[in-house]
Picture 1 (cartoon, one colour):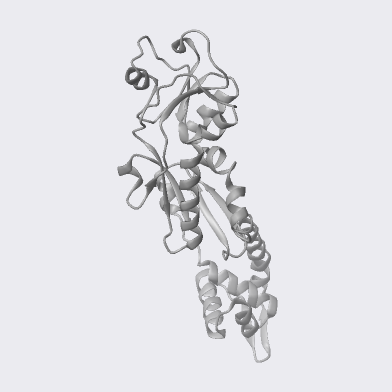
Picture 2 (cartoon, helix red, strand yellow; picture 1 turned 30 degrees about the vertical axis):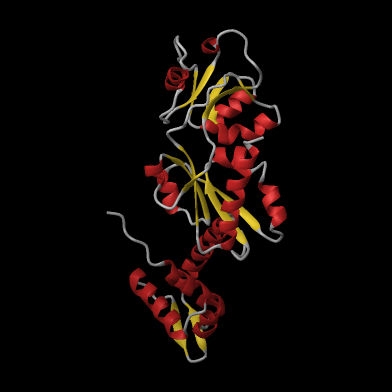
Length: 286
């Protein structure tokens, strides 16, 4: 069985006390009491089986064992601080955190987010990339845009509509649609076979390219790699810009979709939900 490490707080108290050679000064730096710092250092000494300081009337004197431990602890704390800084966005005041998939960030939010920010000067937005349900459970976000069925996404989530399954490409296709390079997102209920059957089309509908998201399917399609069966929610703006075209008129109701859930105590999150719901609905009516 692996040996458990002493608590991080003990090491922080030791490192601060070693720099100041004074428990009171270390306590002021760490926002702890002098007694707490002294007890944590004593606990660390007991755990390691060595004396780290000699307690003198005028302060502390570090021992040889303490001098040996100090540079290693200092380096480890610096490494942890550097790692944490890479995720630091500063104060959470005025920060809206949105957790969603890369597909939604790339195709739905990124082309439109400047409009929302223009209406909310001073607000900052942070995107968290999430894929699996557990990612959402672990995230601390003001807004979550989840994919799945109504049962899968949980209570309190509102579906973003319209989001039919449509066949899109970078350009119109000639000949039979079934003869094209068909791109399908795996792990979804709706696929080319079900779509063709619902559209009343005969023939074989075997995709040539399988991807893990509607977003990647759309990316391949607009880059001329085939015809993607994807969500109209993601493709809407590209169709407006004529970067993607619908190659068949049938729009299949999607058993799964994108749902937005927000922190009801955040006015910014509520404003974002209302803004996005309205923008998506209006843009796809054009």
